[in-house]
Amino acid sequence: MEPFRYPCICAFYDSRDRLNFEALADVMKTILVPRRPEYSCLFLVAHNDDTLGKRRVSYEEGMALAQESSATYFEVSTRRGTNCEDLF
Image (tube, rainbow, N blue to C red; front, side, top):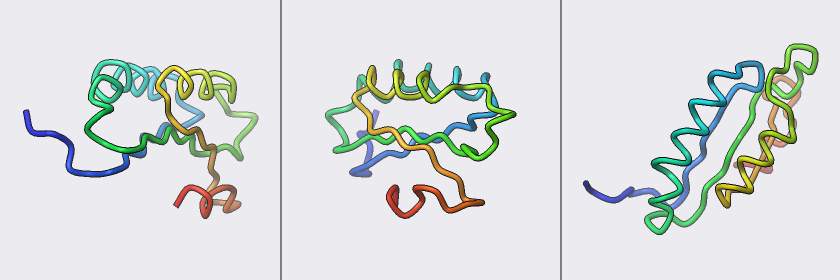
């Protein structure tokens, strides 16, 4: 298998969708983290942080996955523009 050709990887999930988060957590643990030497940085990004009433994945769960994966964690809202510039 050829190595990743990108210096950074941004892994996004929808904070309103638990299944999306769980699937991404599996990908991170089985594919991304074991291949970490092949890229320089990993970002875990929760989007739709402005829908607090519909949220299905807590900030704490996202942060815990990021810490387990040695990833930098962001929560963003494109509607409000929260943390978008910081991420990119």
